[in-house]
Image (cartoon, rainbow, N blue to C red; front, side):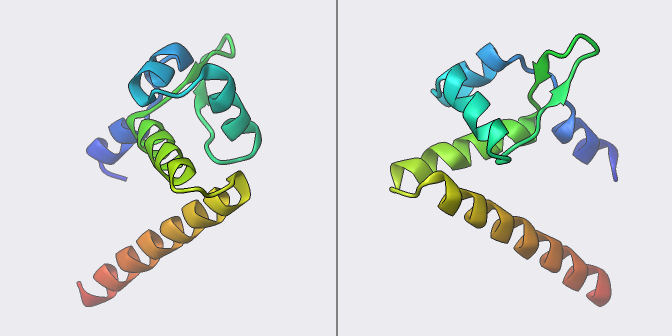
Length: 96
C-alpha cells in the first residue's frame, strides 16, 4: 500500500470532529459503527480515531440515508461499492 493510501486510512479525527465534518450526531456514528458500516481506529486509550476514508464513508452513509435507504440497504451498497473497487483494481493490474 502506498504512503498516500496509508495516510488516507490513518485515524486522526476524534468522533466529535467527525460529527462536525459530516453533520451527523455522535450517537448515530456509534450506531453505524455497531452495525459494521465503518470501523475507526482506536488509540491506546480506546478513543475512536476517524481517518479521511472514514469521513468519506460517513458522508456516503449520510447521503444514502437522505435518499431513503435503511441501514441494511446502506450496508449492502457499501459492500458492493468495495467489491466494484476491488474488481476495478484487479482489472487494472491485469491490463498493466
